[in-house]
Image (cartoon, rainbow, N blue to C red; front, side, top):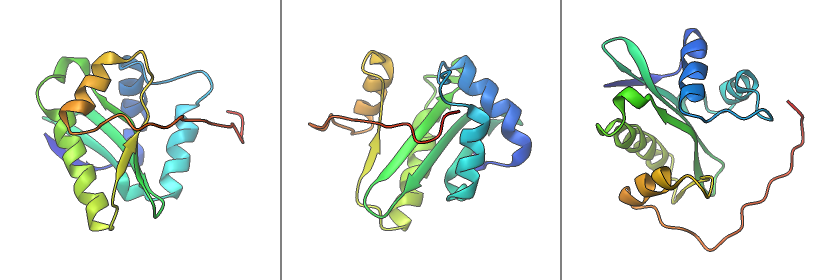
Length: 138
């Protein structure tokens, strides 16, 4: 897999990937999420290609305290081949280069397969409560 920075021509393929992986939600407009990401650390929006086909994507960020990963997706036809791990390794390397001491992910509590994936990468459940407040409606 070739990992590179997201390009605007990737938008349709990325959104289709997120949809097939079940990551989109009615309250999060994926086009707006992409627009917002491109305004902040666009180099931390990565895609993975196999033979020219976009099969993986992830958004990462770092606000000076913690790194975050959102929308990590690998096409179902390419899962369990190490591509998600490779995407995370690339993200971690980029965050470490920025001095980021810790990376966090938020996972829906019923998504046991994804929880198991992150555990295999060394992630542990933090004793925290994740809370959110919508500031702008999509």
